[in-house]
Length: 170
Image 1 (cartoon, one colour):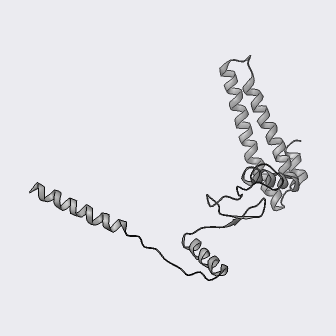
Image 2 (cartoon, helix red, strand yellow):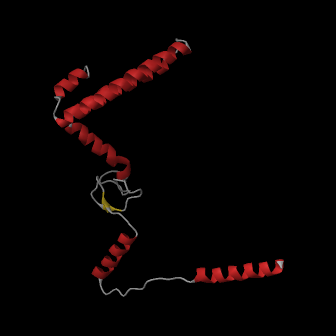
Image 3 (cartoon, rainbow, N blue to C red):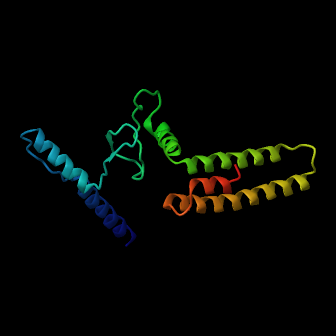
């Protein structure tokens, strides 16, 4: 009885392995470049392949992952790819166009620098130093939350840039 089970198992494995070796494929007759591009487009649509335009060099690319905004080509006039410098360039342009955002970044960096200096203090006990670090962190998080809310008010036109900068205490 056990040998019949092994024979049945071996026969099943042979049958399945024969099924797997068969390959199904489509064959197309391509007459010109337009036809090739059409078939390639259909193939990409079937595979849910997305094409995007790089926000830095404005060339088309296939993003991986799908939320990628910059390609891997070298940026025009640079030695690094768009993916490395594109977001930074876009952000710097946005800073120049939005004075309130530039103010926010400057004050935010001041807070970070203050935190960094507190962490470097050497003459205080660990307990005092930990309290100072925690106080600086809470102060920054509170300020950051309020600043982002006010920044949204500036963007929507409900608060002037001058009032925002005054609130930031610059």
